[in-house]
Each structure stands twice: as C-alpha cells, then as structure tokens.
Length: 159
Image 1: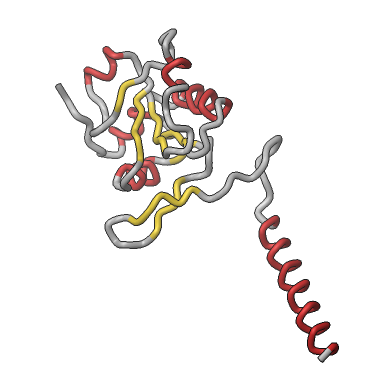
Image 2: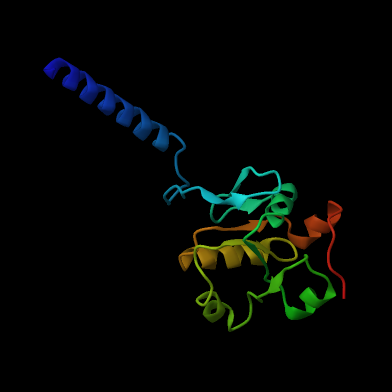
C-alpha cells in the first residue's frame, strides 16, 4: 500500500512539473508578464474564439475575424469628423486626443474585449497602450488602421 501511494505521489509531481514547464514555454513579452488567453465565447462555427494577445497590433484578417465574434466592442479613436466620414460597422467613436478620453476609459469594463482602430494605426497604438496601463486585459488594435482595412477591400459605413 505504501509503495502504491509513493508511485501515485511521484506521478502527480511529474505531471505537475510537466504542466508547469509547458505553461512557461511560451515566454513573455519583454518587460511584461504573459497575458492569459482571452477566450470570448463561440463563433458562428460553434468553436471557441480567443482574442489576440492583450495590447498587440493585428492584421486585417485577424481584426475582421474579431469583429464577427459576440462580445467584441469596436472603438474608433479618430476625431468625430473622421468617424462621420466613414467608419467600421458597429464602431463607437472615442477620440484619443479628446480631453475626456482617459475619463471615459475609466467608465468602461476592463475585462471586456476591445478591437481598436484609427486611420493608420498610430493613434490606436497610443490608445491601446493607455488602456493596458489602466488595467484593460483584452484589447488589441488594427495594424495600418482603416487605411489598411479599406485597401484590403473591407467595407466601411458611409453617412
């Protein structure tokens, strides 16, 4: 009986060591800890969908895929004038250069999933950095912004 208990304990310790090593094998971004997966729910295929890594810049196909997922909030961080000229479907306008930007961010749920974009990707990168600094855990932005979006043939809502 004692021998079986020792074998079970050794097996459990070995499994824990393997799982611990596997959990660390992905590494972490420079200067930060590795974010946890951002599972949002299931997409139209019924498969689970995982949001891109927190704080990252993603390409048009990844961003487009994210927009089809339930629970993803799309933030356009351009000026109201730019937003009015054309924006992504269901996007909410929150001008990153507005004095009210930081105060408005503080009213948003930090654990929701946010897909952020601007014209070229610069302002959205700034907005995402601010959001991560404020403790948002599931936020990413579009590389190349709405310019890249339209260049790839993706639609925008026109007034």
